[in-house]
Image 1: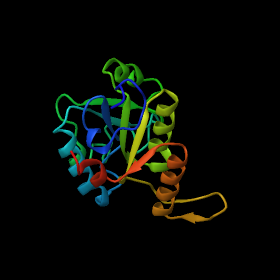
Image 2 (image 1 turned 120 degrees about the vertical axis):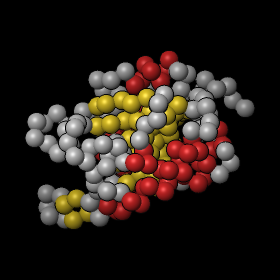
Image 3 (image 1 turned 30 degrees about the vertical axis):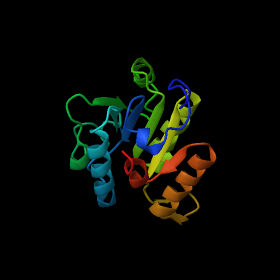
Image 4 (image 1 turned 90 degrees about the vertical axis):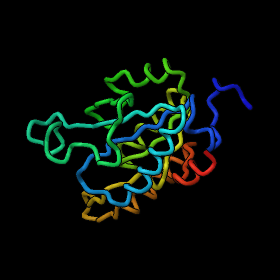
Length: 190
């Protein structure tokens, strides 16, 4: 086995143990994402049985009247993704939780070299965080069935389905060297 300090993808059965951290990204109550409840519940139940760290990333708007501002209805964590005592919570106001936070130094202080990401949105916060983590020397796994995206209409009036954007986001991340797995693939050997 390679020394743990090298930045190499971990085998799925090693992912929930040190030196790995699970980053649960922006899993707020609104909008409702019922398709993520089962994978996130299984993932957190399994991860909490290992030695790896869990970090909850909460992104809030700074805009005074934004529905995404802290304390507004719907900005609490989904019931399946509520942080437990001892789990780190990082609050950010950008898509990149490495900006204006101590996340990078905290992960390095705890000997973390591999990040496993779950959350929303695939093309937004998850992708930004994954790419920045790679630039900082972390190896990264994104869990396809524990992430989701939102539909959107572009400036030309073309409507993009959430599933299409999610799939595109995963394909782009994989092309950039991010490992993409399902929760089952990650957890089955743990």
